[in-house]
Image: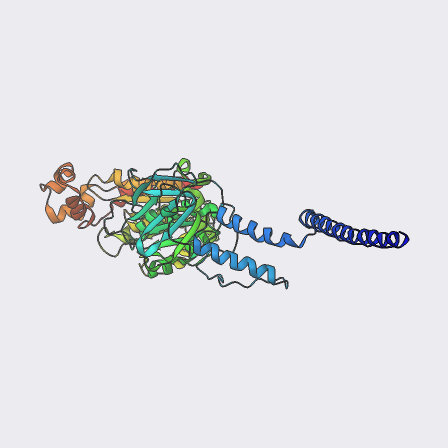
Length: 497
């Protein structure tokens, strides 16, 4: 029995040992499992967890998509951002180096988050569009695409002739298209990707038309361009259709004073350019003038002439006050062809008798504008027959006098529209002298019984071609200096005031 008891005790001890070992193993596994669970939770919630790198990249991708970029643009920007993260030297390489025509060097104060398209193709003279938001141009296709911010915007299309006179059929129209929705809402409606993104606004306009005529250069282009772009203080890009290199060369000083960037030859520009603001077309307010209510910042024609005096560094801002010691200067514009003065020496003597120092000039079409501006600004009175030469009134000192001699043929209304009202808007004094039949060479040419002499109204009723042929194209003027003397005296009185 004693031996059996020993054997039973050793068996019990062996059984207990086996179960104790299993318990230790199970407990170790439970502790290990608990450690792993707790460690995983700590790894997720810890602020310094290594896993935070991945969400940063994802956030950037979300931001890029939310900005509504096209696929190519988003890819380029993501590559650039990756380079910025890897490069800690403080410099970021870029393939888009600024060029002289890019106008993307400086941020513009005009950059805005608004999105709107305002187009007017029913105006009496001009067709224009003002576009704010996502605007893209394709010059060689003569197209402008506006991507509205609101997905509820309907698709619209306008045909805009960017020359200031909509009747100029020789100038091609530009198609302005407002998409139905933004790319974020409808990827199929996305426009072409931006090749160049500008941080300054742009003005799209055309040359051609009637440019080349000195008066039309100012009335049709320079004055409307000033009204459209002066507010940007040089931070604006000009997109020019029908570009005339000679024209940009002739008026380079004015164009450079309005824009710090080289003009883009739109018809040869196949790249898609993107802007936050674009003006399509130039608005002609009135002939050779500006209507403040229609101009940004309520600009005036007097502002334009002051701008020209600054641009060409013209020294005189006020005319001479006549005294016994100092005579005011009168510049007589002598045309080289039709509508000429045929008695210039007599007119000169009459002006000198009225107290003026007189100069006679025949401005050349190829003369540098700077040279002409300096010459005109050195005078106080400008005298000439109705014609482009009177455009030089823009260079007179403020308060000067313009005397327009109106040819025979009931042309007073046209003369006042083209020069009378603009001259007054410039802050100058305007005087008008209408030629009598006896002062016109048409009387000698056609005789007193010809309708052109006897009944000018019938010529006007027959159409503009006859008016232009006779009254503007075949007529010269022999001024009756005795009849003209009171006009010269009135000019002197204006300067004394």
